[in-house]
Length: 172
Image (tube, rainbow, N blue to C red; front, side, top):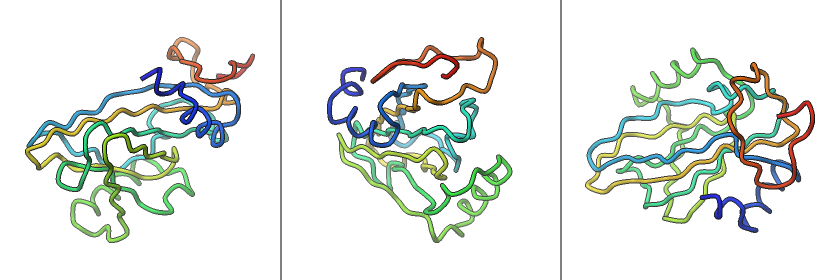
């Protein structure tokens, strides 16, 4: 995954969004086994404890490793939700609406292997359980500008992986 993140097409795209100096704050592999896999409720990545100042550029990079479709739990988004930082109570209200079928504005984002979805850190997104007989794997990296300020105690700072440029004094 490091080779992928440091490839020219990925670095150049992220530089357009994050500026010349940026790093991976955290990354994860998601697996939804056939007929299993839990629902990922609606959330905004920035609010989930990343301890990054609100003004900092942050984007999620979601790479499909398997086909992702409605049946096996592709990503779902709420357009326009990136305009405001919400609370966990707001997430719960959206989740309640989603479970009752009231989110008519929900947009599904199917993806083929190799497709990348770039996720604004404030856009509400979710995914359903895998109801298919196919496994769905995806890789996700949360990338942040090196201009960001870490807002928690230093002992909570994860080991960042700089993709391009350099870290800056007094910054992340």
